[in-house]
Image 1 (tube, rainbow, N blue to C red):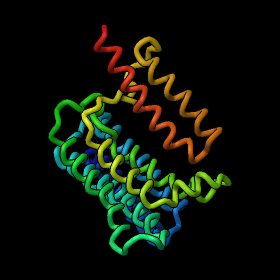
Image 2 (cartoon, rainbow, N blue to C red):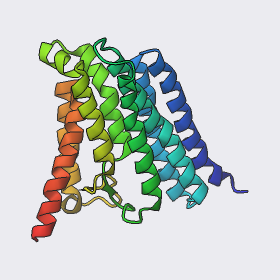
Image 3 (cartoon, rainbow, N blue to C red):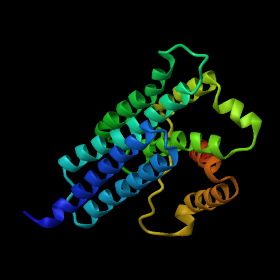
Length: 234
């Protein structure tokens, strides 16, 4: 068998391995390391598809492996992170933090639906699980690094966390077309929206650091909605 066919699947398994390591750190409330290994997994997730296309070895096995790996890295880990954040409050029933795993359920449904949805070949419908995972994993880091009492009150409020959880599960599966971030043949006229978003993302991350992550995802969704309305009006 051609060794090239094993390269993308091996990278996918490394994504899964990164997710497993992130789980261990999340269990131990080491949120920065969990964020690092989820980010590494997402980085690997990009390159498994890249090499599969480059070597022309895309397969059904690779598709299923990719979703299974993402289920851990971008589905289970953010659910556990939200569980840990909700558990920090002593004023909620013991069962309440388990609602954080609604994020995991929403991610699972999203990944299963993505595999059979033929509309999502060049763009997305609903927020991709890696983007959602980065938002959720950024929250405890925002909390750890902020000096704003208002931000602390917001991110330690169990009802705000539940609202974030429910919105997360919704936006993963919402029928909202989101523009593709993949640039195949660069021409500014064709990809000016992507270039603009990239520039805004860099500024948000530089000025707001971890808080910039949820802000840039919100910007991504907002720009997509505006772009969709513009297309319909043409």
